[in-house]
Image (cartoon, rainbow, N blue to C red):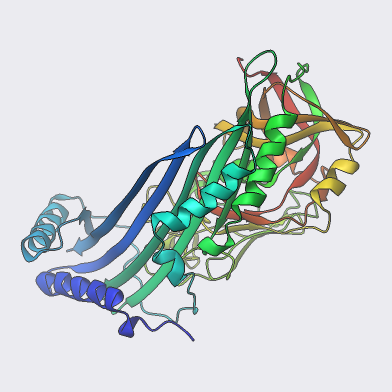
Amino acid sequence: MAWDPTADPIAQRGFATCDRVLELIGDRADALVTCGQGTSALTRFANSRIHQNMASDDHHVRLRVVVDDGRIAQASTTRLDPEGLERLVESTITAAGLCPADPEYPGLTEPAPLAEVDHFDPATAAAVPGDRAEVVADFVGTGPDLESAGYCSTDADTHVLCSTTGLRYASRSTMAQVDAIHRAAAVEGPPTDGYGQITSSRLADLDGRQVGEVAAAKATGGANPIELDPGIYEVVLEARAVASVLLFPAWLGFNGKAYAEGTSFAHLGEAQLDERIDLWDDGTDPRSLGRPYDAEGTPKRRLDLVVAGVTVGLAHDRRSAALAGTESTGSSIGQESFGGYPGDLFLGAGDESLLQLIAGVERGLLVTDFWYNRILDPKTQVVTGLTRNGLFLIEGGEVVAPVQNLRYTQSVVGALAPGHVLGIGNDAQLVSNEGGVVHVPSLRLRSWAFTGGASG
């Protein structure tokens, strides 16, 4: 049964708050107001023991007003009492009057139909510390001789958006995640870590034992790593590593504003990536965790970015869309200086298991994760960073030895270029990273440039 926000008391409180803000504004300005209500909870553990349970309630209102000929200001508050809302309205309208007019202001979004999306699980929203502790116990139990550390989290959010143009939208979502490591002591040298993560809209989907077994195997298998010379290696990137590097083409490549400014690598209509690559953004997909509308109230839909290696789309908010003579793709994050962002990214899966990807490599590296990732050149998508939590040498199609962490310096677009994608895994999954939550599989790539050890 589809969720009915008019029958949900939390959503109704949000609508009442937004209506009160619009009532205070009256006809003095055009306005877009959102109300977020939710709970974030975390069970943290270290040294294989839970040491912290915490939870926070989030209630906030964000307001964007436009006065006169495009004078814009926005502000937010966590005070939802009458005095707090009145102060928010008056200060934001006053601030807008002091701003210069914006001749390229695209106007507020008009109402349009929304896709039916409900990434919400009641059991996850109602989870208590004991529920998360069960997941932690399962993870820790897979490494009785190892040290474990990490967290299990549950989040629930109800969001309401209203405007003077008649928008009245609501959405809700939940997210559960276990993110943790096992650490193994080495006979010589430093200890080694193995990593595991799983993300879902449902706490019941978090199999702490399965994730723990993966992390434990990486930790114990990573003891006494060998030193490998920097160079160009064939690689199998696990899903976590793939998610890390896809952040940069999403952020600075398929961004309509970056494209207009000439800083994007994207060339629409050109086969820039391997023909195996399909990349799209879709907050309406049941596997995603996104809302059915963006920060400006534009309905989301599937947005193809790359089809069979050909760059075909860009993410636009209302401003970049107006400048490009097209329509918003529902990709606003509420910051016009940033532009459109594909925040519900999908990379098409393949038909090979992780073991089959490894079996095809004569000599290369298996990469669990990248971190400290930094972009060096948006135009070429050259990124640098470090491996962590499990780097292994592959020879003759088998993992033969752990390897000391390496620094990489690599063009992401170059690594995915035509002829460079040798295999795509059937293990696509949600992965949480700095840019949000993406849905990606493992990849086998022809080459990846490692340029130094972890120290430089």
